[in-house]
Length: 158
Image (tube, rainbow, N blue to C red; front, side):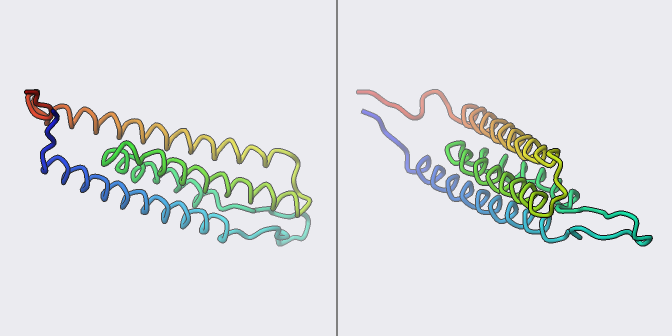
């Protein structure tokens, strides 16, 4: 017979709520960074002398801010490592959408030369970073729970 304490159930419920909150923060942050990095661009502009054009279809400074999403992903994994894949998936899919939008903008404008496809590499790199943050959070969570749990609590047999 297995006995589960009400304290453990309450703690698990609290951890899931915390993980959901961090996941929602990840979604909001990923969408905000995507919007800012795609909206704050100049597009194709002529230089002052009229000789050539500057092309900007993504604001790299804002897009690099997406690496900061590793922290809420880490916290979500620390709260509940079962919900961490959702946070990683959301953060990565949004960054892949940003890369796809950039490639589409270059293709529509006629300024693309094929190198804009490397933006997918940047999005995949972000996805790997989010995955490593989630793994680190999950490992810390498991080690913390093992340290807090005495050996005699959790399962009692008759």
